[in-house]
Image (tube, rainbow, N blue to C red; front, side, top):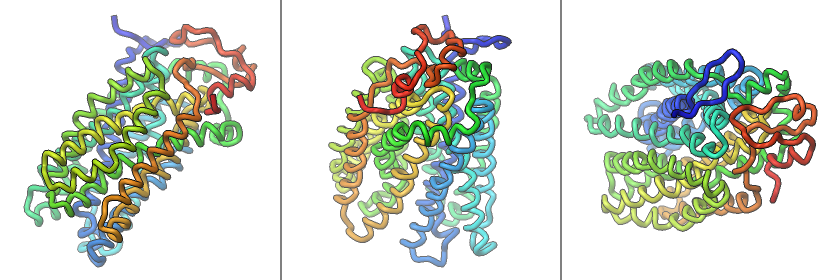
Amino acid sequence: MATTAAPSPGTQDVPITRVATASLIGTTIEFYDFFIFGTASALVFGRLFFPSLSPLAGTLASFAAFGVAFAARPLGALIFGHFGDRVSRKQMLVTTVVMMGVSTVAVGCLPTYDTIGVAAPILLVCCRLVQGIALGGEWGGAVLMAAEHAPRNRRAFYASWPQVGVPLGLVMGTALFYGIQRLPASGLESLGWRIPFLASTVLVVVGLYIRLKIDDSPAFRVVKKANAAERFPAAVVLRSAPKALLFGALANAATGVLFYMATTFAYTYGSHAGFSHGSMLLAVGVASLIEVGTIPVVGAALDRYGRRPVLMTGCAATIVWAFPFFALIDTGNIIALIISFLVALPVCHALVYTPTSSFVPELYPTRLRYSGAAMSQTLGVLAFSAPVPFIAATVFSATSSAWPLAIYIIAGGALNLIVVILARETKNDPTHWTDRPTEARALPKPATEPEPTVRGGSQDFHRGNGTTR
């Protein structure tokens, strides 16, 4: 019998698999759109939109345009988190997927520098800003919809489904670019690079249809029914849960540095080791395809063993693999190249990225969860993901050596490990909990939560604000 999410009055049962699938498809679209921009930045945008710069400066300018979206993500987190906590989780997710789709198609239609001059890179950056705002609100809403609909003993597993959208979107994007980059240079730079951006139209239509078929989560409907939503949830997060905000942001250190080193800067590094763009795309695509399968496995392990043990294992693996990752690429051997990515993404990245979808939202009470999770995630991404391509390109240009890049990955893993050691385990927390006594008495317990109602009071708030054990 299919597991269903708890209904509220006037609504029908919604299978948790449908909710999780909607979250998965939405994040697949979002990250497909996001990553094809990153790939195009490494392959063609420098020449098409910044032709007056040197090759290095053009690459750095392209990565800077890529990084603009990261700067915009906190704004998206504030906007969508605010309305997601006050109005509707579902409505925010519908809005984000439309914004991302429209901006991505717009990139595919942009004239280049040769056609309209300096207006071309300006428009490119504007489209990237819209993508960043949308992505800032996407992740938090997607994981909450899955986690808040799921039974407690399967919460991390279903919350991991949106995480699958990252490698799946990457597989789709790299697969397209793998075929397109085989075109002659003239074909790639005139029309070929536009195809992945224009193709997202189909994905957006499918994702929008599926997301319109789901309901808000039972825990959120309880808060809405009791009129317990905060007027300014982001302000409450900053005032009442700064440690949760900090811990949630730092929980992205390992995944941010490792992932963008392996999927964005790696194209530049691989070319210096003698690999073609096609070989790099193949290695990233194969590893990402396998990670589509390993992320749910890690999600199931999180439900069984807890968030902290799995995340600590991932941080340790990331630290250990930093030097071998570059050493295998330096061999110039295609098999060694693929092995380096098979460990970096399906193993190391899956172990550090998957836990964030349950660990970070569980730091916050229901009424603050969208804002808190989105703010933590976007601040972490801004600090540990956005600078990676730019810093890596600059450092490698100055040193022509991999060891500073490996140290960069190790630092991210070590910082993440320290945070997890200090954090408390959230595995056994209920989906719906509160820090206000009046809410604890007034809000009925969702049917998905069989455990006793959490008592109100400040001690209950500390159960979920990221304090130490």
